[in-house]
Length: 119
Image 1 (cartoon, one colour):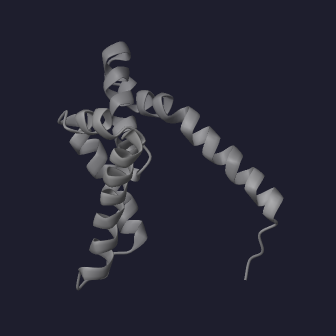
Image 2 (cartoon, one colour; image 1 turned 180 degrees about the horizontal axis):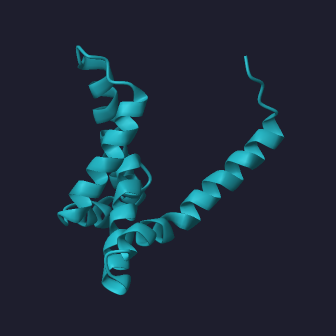
């Protein structure tokens, strides 16, 4: 059942992004979606509304872009609690450091294995 909930929530987030790109008269680009989803994840997390979605869907809510925004917001909130206002800047980076490092390492490994070519 956990897989189904994750699939529905994660897929729903992706469907929203795709519909925004396809159905708007002003063509929203993937870059707009990236910034909007991360910022939206921060805003919804700051209001306390994203954590119940994470509790319900697990990876279906944490893997898509709003999940990254949620992670940044929670790190910033924790950082402010521990280090004051300056902790808001460091907290988000600390909270997401493992994920960012993993993305860099796995991206580098994929580039070595698959030998990408620019065109």
